[in-house]
Amino acid sequence: MPSTVPFWIALSVTVLLIGMSLVTGFRRKRKAHLWLGPLTIVAMTIAILLTEQLVRNYEFPPGELAIHLVFAKAGGLLAIPVAITGIWLWRSEKARVWHRVLVFVWLASVLTATGTGLWMFAHGTLKTA
Image (tube, rainbow, N blue to C red; front, side, top):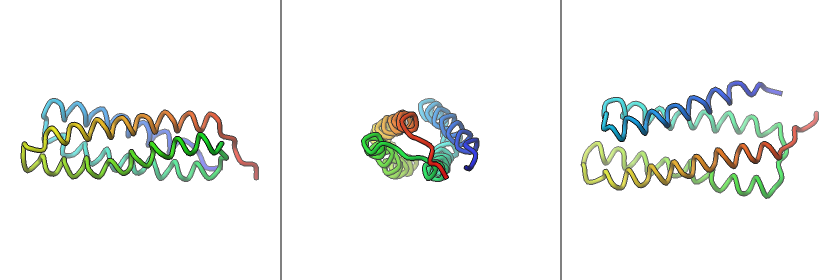
């Protein structure tokens, strides 16, 4: 069975980057935010890929898995409009409200995906060889 350490590191880095991106965004520290926002999405992608590797070694109740997948897919897909409105905001102040709203919706889905993912793993069982 592969180690879970890379997954936990990726998840921790993602959470840290989310926090830093939010702080720099709200404080309008544009230079830092323009680096941290995309790095957050990259870290989230790495965490998702490591999660996929980990999931192959577990069996989950279908109900818990189905609930988690709704929020996980939403979190992944909502990163796209967040990035698009972020680029738009870089070019025009008109995008500020749209970007902020989408960031909060994305954040809610990602936090819910994280919570349901932990809940799902709590109900999962390790596959035997």
